[in-house]
Length: 120
Image (cartoon, rainbow, N blue to C red; front, top):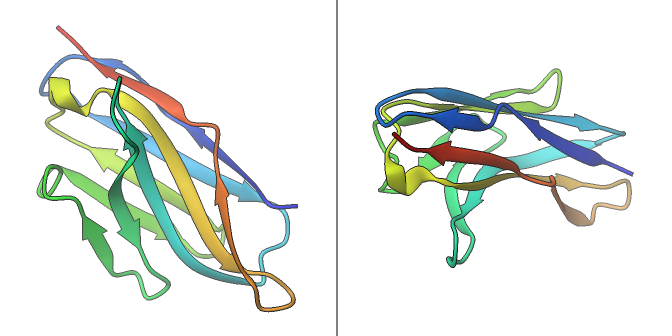
C-alpha cells in the first residue's frame, strides 16, 4: 500500500515563501505524474502544478512565475516552492501521486493535506 505524506505548510505573510514536500512510502513500480492540488474555503479542489515522468511541469495560471514544482525520482518525492504568496493562496494543499501498479493499473493516491495560510 503506497502512502503519501505532505509537510511544510504553515502561516506566512503576503509576499513570503514556503516549500511543501511530499514523500511516498511503499513500493511503486512505475511513477507517472506527481502533482499538487489545493482547496480553499468554500471552493472546489483545483490543480496547482503537475510534473510528469519526464520532468515537464504544468502550472495553473494563478501560480505561474511564483511556484516551482520539482521531483526526486530516486526518492519518489515532489516539492513545491511557493514564492510571493498571496492571500488567495490560502488553502489546504494536497499531494497526488499517479503510478502503475504491478498489474499495470493506473493508481491515484492522495495525501491528507497540509494547511497553508497567507495572512498579515
